[in-house]
Length: 68
Image 1 (cartoon, rainbow, N blue to C red):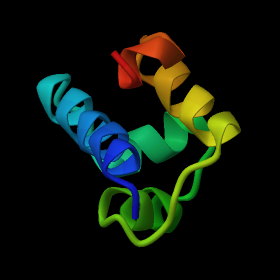
Image 2: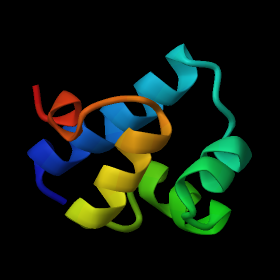
Image 3: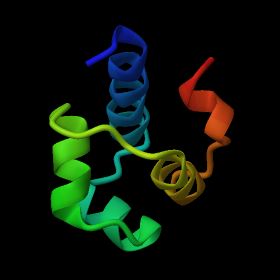
Image 4: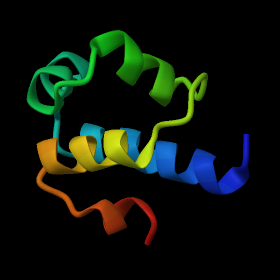
C-alpha cells in the first residue's frame, strides 16, 4: 500500500477518535458497513473517493481534510 494512502487512512482514524465517534456510529452516519470501515482502518482495503466523501460528510469534514 502506498504511503500516501496509509496517511489518508491514518487521518480517518485520527479524526474519528478526536471526535469520539465509534466505528458503529460512523457506519450508521455514513451508510458504509461496519466491516468495510474496519477493513479500511486496518489498511486491508483502499477506500474509493466516494467512500472517503461519505466518511468526511458523516464526520462534518471536507474531503480535502484527509489530504492536507
